[in-house]
Image (tube, rainbow, N blue to C red):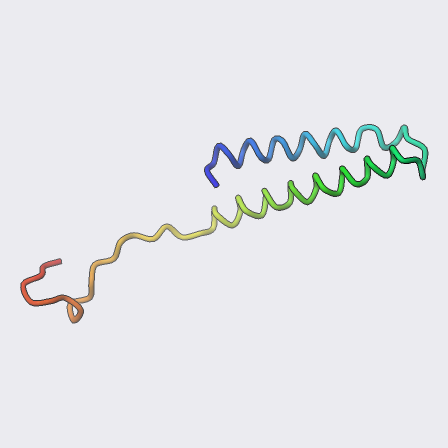
Length: 80
């Protein structure tokens, strides 16, 4: 994931988590609105966790440099 896309996805995830948490204290337990807000919170939290996991995973990946062939793998007349 490109850094810009990761930043946008993280911002959207935080925005959705925040918006799903705001109404929870004001909704009566057991109402349909409360259940929908909890489901929205769970789904947006999963999305945010996946974005964080993917960005951290890609940050840890080593950057591979093209390696030269070992001398025993080179053909006759080929130079490094």
